[in-house]
Length: 594
Image 1 (cartoon, helix red, strand yellow):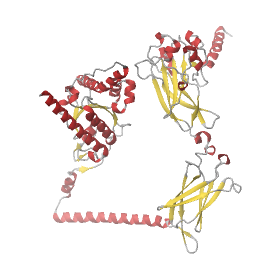
Image 2 (spheres, rainbow, N blue to C red):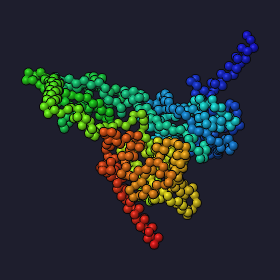
Image 3 (cartoon, rainbow, N blue to C red):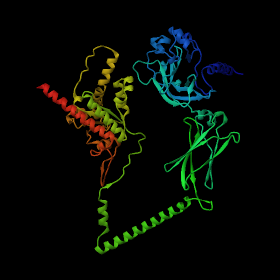
Image 4 (cartoon, rainbow, N blue to C red):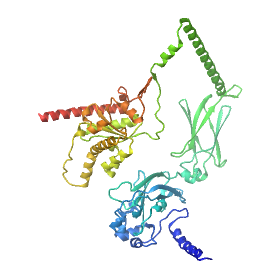
């Protein structure tokens, strides 16, 4: 055995325990138990460690709140206690997945979350924080994992998969939101977390239908008719579910037939038959059968009551209809063909008699304007995204008109509208300017609603007290106005580079003037609303309103018909209210000038 073979054997013997300590057989890296002192001192054995409540209590002197699990605010600063390694930016993890694991309790589920770290900032990555919350609930489960302080991961580790500890005791059939956050958490950066929404398995999916009383329903139903009697046979619920009674409901032509069913389990424990009486002959009934429990799942089936001859033999009307109906259709089709042939021959004879050339008639018919259906392009997988910006200096009536316009466009113009007034939570989290900058990049089109206040330079009011809440409020008030200025700069820059300007649009309401459009926005297409709703639709979807010999007719977005729908009527009312407010404001300004 040569020296190189011995070296390889020694290296494999050393690498084996390290792989077994930090990774699962499928390659995922699982958390390990290690002390907080080992993490703070940078011990090599503390590679990917779970932080427990006892670790938090030891580091901070008190236990974390039960609602936050093992997590604490600013975990990197509080637990690693080194500002130098906790101030860098780390981007959100990728490929967050949720996997179910076996749990003996039939009433709950257990999941494990896995993810991959991002390439960006991976050298400064210090750990992860994973939180789980039921949608609409208040309970939060949170897990914290840290690397030791001396670690610096290379870019190749971005392909490694990290996993959380199991999250047990999740209610069945419930939606949850899982969030994986990269540490350290920066103060004013975006995209440092990744959220996914998932649903736990239903009782049937996890345990099978025979083990779930709430979800059980009869699977096998057989209907037989003997004379005027209709007999229905169905399978009974398993004895372990404790279902002792059932019910059946049949209805047709406004009539209902309710039947209570109480099987005798001593005779047959698997199936039961019951009779449906007083059903009308020649009628098709829709029936439901279910366990006599609250919110039980109902099984639907059909019962066709056949007519009875005097001799007692059932007679079905369906075969006669099945034969007569195709014959009638065939006769109608033949008559139609004969009429068309006769009409053409008659017209040719008449033209010959009057010496009229058929080419002239054909040319005349083709010259008429035709109304036809025009389909939107199918190469777009999603509707176009439209960002609407406006001035907040023209009063609440103008802002209300902008909101009603966004609602109308989203409902009747096949467009997804992005409006800061509809996304106040994200605006508060990201900041108004950051929110607008992100949507300027991501949206397909940008529409600026121009008004008198857009060309003004409002100064934020002086606050009566200093505080973060007041600063955030001022930022929300003036974020859209600042975004309009930013859009104007983007338009000028794109124009100077010779780039396409179709992404940007400007519009005014009827109560505004064209002079209200800023100079830089006059370089792009601009519309007057609501007169130009059809032109706006043509711009958003890239379809022509007119072509030789035809035109595009769109329901509910013309000047005459948009107010016939509720969203259009609300838009018309909001524009009228804003016009009255603008006239009153202008009149007051004139009186003050005098």
